[in-house]
Image (cartoon, rainbow, N blue to C red; front, side):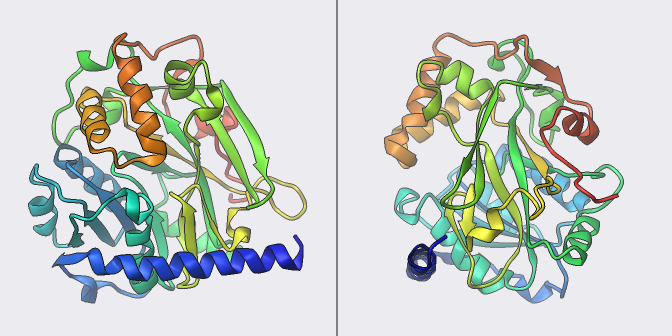
Length: 336
């Protein structure tokens, strides 16, 4: 990259951090327990609205992996999410009624919290329906992964968003609070993905899966991106650009080693397609607070009219992380 290009990226990063600091004024603290955070703790950051039914399993899953403290921004929930989170001893919570869209879809709020509380920690930034799978995750805690990344001099860990779905119409299997969502959404597309290199930011751009073939079949380039960098050894000078799809400095996005080998990577199992999906899509469409005039949610609502069954010839039932590595959807790299 030229010196001019590098300068422009540094300038953009400073602007992103600056606007995050301004947007942080929109956050009202509800429960602050940050004095309990110890050196070396793995932290999780999340923005949500009306996700009460998902929270018990989400917290349990990441506690079991070894997350020490959770940072939530509640965007004006009215379903009890805020009160539930405020009662959790390992949660710090902020609330805001401000525009999700105007905060770069929550990333300004999260960037401000990462800058203030995440500096020097391994930080996991995910949505409440995203569940990290990494090599050896059934037997090794998240801290084992971050220790290995530290030893290897790796500052960021990428993960492909893997859309999970049930067999049969989504609405036919009701989800209950506290349930493992992958008891219902057990299936994923084993193929049907396109990958290209985003040379400007150094990351891979991945699209495809059930959302592309069901909701964006006539315009697959408009399908959601599936590439993410959710786990980062955070520094206060870092900033996410577009959700967690990529960040600055651009070196954090690189998915390959200098000699061309594939770095260790994971998957984010995406539990979006439960029976709650239609109501959520209607709510978000009405709010109009999502990217590109909520284009994605317009496609969802139109597609849901057909009561689609996502199961197809590419469908495979999830077993474990080794299955995903064999399929080429994640990699253990040289972590033994």
